[in-house]
View: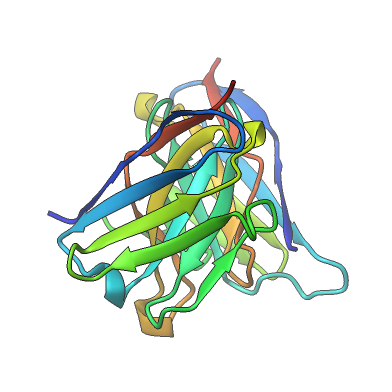
Length: 122
Length: 111
């Protein structure tokens, strides 16, 4: 079965760090473009970061310089290292695959993890 | 950044109704997002679910009552005959350029 399972969320104080994980099954993380998308309580969806199959990484302006996306091929797992956390980072964090038929078609997030909640509070 | 604007922000409808949601892409003098537009459905406490990709292509397993249209800057999601399981929030999202951006969402509620 193709699925993503996110973990690692929790309650953390402002300025703290947290690492989220997203374990994939049914497909290979390193062969796909993988993302983190977040949703603050009662709010809409916000794209956070992408790691392309080739290894390039990009970030949204609100997390640039504080968050790092990475992957472990041996574990078939995606990560998000979050440093210098702020109250406005409080959200459910989803991992998601961006699928674009190898660049042949407009892509979309076709597989999503169940989400993991991060609460930044003192 | 490309801004995605959805309307309406909420709509009340009955089972069997036809529901249309619009999404507009804006970014300075750009020509829009071509067909790099997707639609998602999200139910409370759940992850979003892909409905439409490339503006008008139905994702596998999605009922045919859902359809998408448009290109460039203006897009539409239509539910031809609303079913009880369709009450949810719908988001458009552009994939033309980074940062990937979503519309603010449209909540479809029971009338």
